[in-house]
Length: 321
Image (cartoon, rainbow, N blue to C red):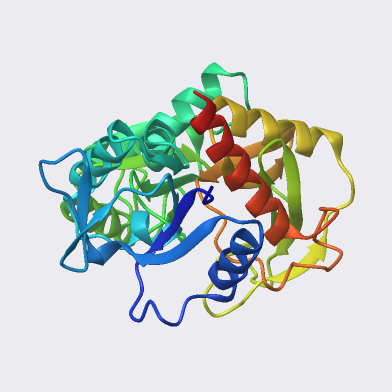
């Protein structure tokens, strides 16, 4: 009896040249008897039929599962987020087991919703507000002091801005300086709505934990080399260090993953004054070539094997249901 069909799906300039990680998972899955294929999301079209979809212009049966990679989520045009999530819903209605599931992807990709779910599960996250106006940003500064603004749907720290009250040129009775006000206006003009959070003081590093199923697969500290402590500074690339065993960090990451109902996740935390704080949960594990087999790799057989374990287990559970 042939094994299940699993598509590893992303957006590529050239799908014949997948990343090392995709090629590695593809090889391991096929070695386990899974019929794994690497598929470009741009080649897929959905029709009205619940039996087939169109792949590269040809009707194709649905696979048993799809591994949704990061660029499916991040490299789409503005405004088609609802369409993307609608596709995920349709795929699941047609019996495709998505990794991660559609409901989890929808929750995690919306940073406000993600924070609400984590807070309800008693997981430490920054206070988070939805912002529609410059005046609301001024109020956040009054309440919190230093703040961070970010898109509701965003990735890779693009357009994430840290601001302090009373910047140069601020007027009497207001906290936004000239540059801060201009930046806020243009971000709102582009995105229409933003998330605001208080800046969490930290020792100038963040912790990234990769979760595969119920285990931490990798742990790495990103250490700032910038004078302002920013880890994502383009002119001052971060350095890395091993993260020593920390039960509190592990518990926080695994609890967050379960609360968001994720099979696979990458979690960014900072060490705040009162303990670890979850800054962001990403519903994919994208790059681990430089971690595999190093001190950052916490698995027994390697991160690639752990990823394949999650996929095969999810497919097996779906087929039993």
